[in-house]
Length: 466
Image (cartoon, rainbow, N blue to C red; front, side, top):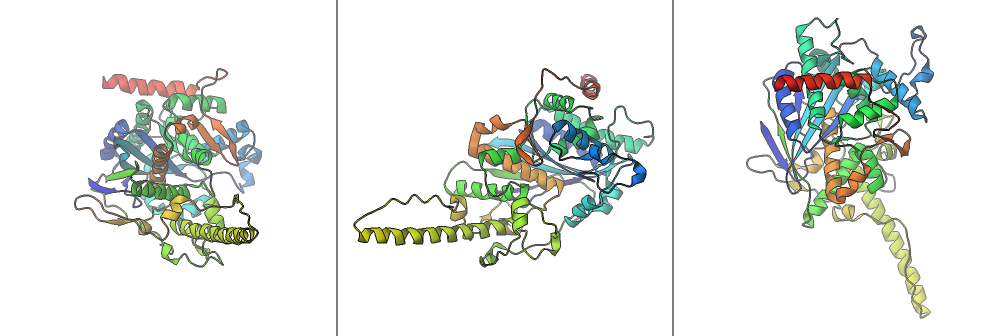
């Protein structure tokens, strides 16, 4: 094992889990799940919707509107997508609380290869490839599994494939068995895909789906996008933005001698040679100076994506964007202060004073305290020193995204305490931030046939162990 400890772990370390390593690693993953205080997940898949389908398929595209306003129609569309597309990776981060503000974290990047014939969205795969996803590695080393495996399909005659899929499924079963809080970020599709891929065929109705989730994760499902929008509404709520924002929050708390988030990561080393990860470095925060023409992409800064991707001439670097926004806010504050001083001076000449009630934009305390500052985080013992500005995580890598999701949750927990619990089991819906999906059992619904069948499998495993 290799350890890395830092006050804010921008350098995410994770263990790749492939068909060559799932057997030795499955017990380690299950062990970390059993010890975890909470689990964060993220997934990558081959499609979010069905676009430009060939007429020969005879599909009714009205049944594939994943942004429908009616929840029943939306669920039906999402279920259609999950049943016809595939997961290609699952990021899983276990956060174990060890002492005040400190968490020991294990990150796993499970590379998956569904064996059912399925659709692949060119836009989705292009997006993944542009963000560093290794399609060749997924094709050669992905953990082979069958989607909706209740029971294991007859065509799965390969012992190796059966073993790989069963071990991966057992990891998901362990999450259910241990009843840990599950943390996601805007993760409704993650939940739909995870259910279809490893729990069983999706129920026909969204009421049964929600009922099943409430039974599978009784400790609650926490959506960091929804929680952040309610507790800390701001300019943006996409994952990378919130992660870097919360990093800064925790550094400020540390500097003020308040309870702050301290992360220790451990990577489990296996014999399989690890593929190196790389991504293009964008401008550092030291270059954030020209505010007359913004050097960052405003669309990316607001929504977390840009149609130009690498061709965009503006920066997509989140710390750089935050530094620029800080300077913009300081400039606005300076202008407001100048106007206030002019007004006060004028009134003083008339023997009058007036209270300044200007309610304009104010710079956040966090950004003000960290203006132009690069924090060095020294690790313990013989570990390397990590500079936060130069080791940003690889966005849209499932393991890194899972880690960031967990980090945001732990940070918000430190900052807001039990207020977070009032927002659990509320999952963001696309385009309807004020109308989350409520994950709760209704007296008008019941568990699905899939749930009853799969729970029996888990109970039988428990019985066999005893």
